[in-house]
Length: 95
Image 1 (cartoon, rainbow, N blue to C red):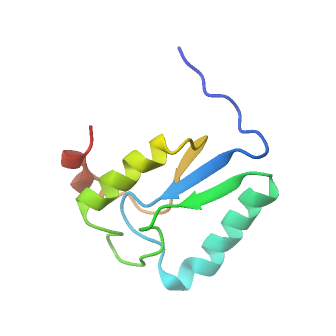
Image 2 (image 1 turned 30 degrees about the vertical axis):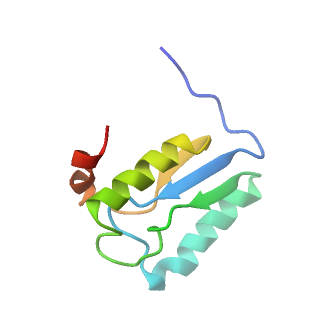
């Protein structure tokens, strides 16, 4: 069995939105969460659809591309921004 390594200072965490995006009125709380992550010494990147504020952050194809990007961009960890209700729409575009 493979076990992931623990995150180290300087490692990168990618946040993507597989379902809903972060609504504008929730940006302050979301930014506070990212600030806490950065205070632990980790870098944070976000995919383009994270802050769309829409019920579905993007169409299924775009979310699938961002999903793939999140796991192939040399990130050490990937976090989902919100939701999960619309994840199935990206399945047909995912290997």
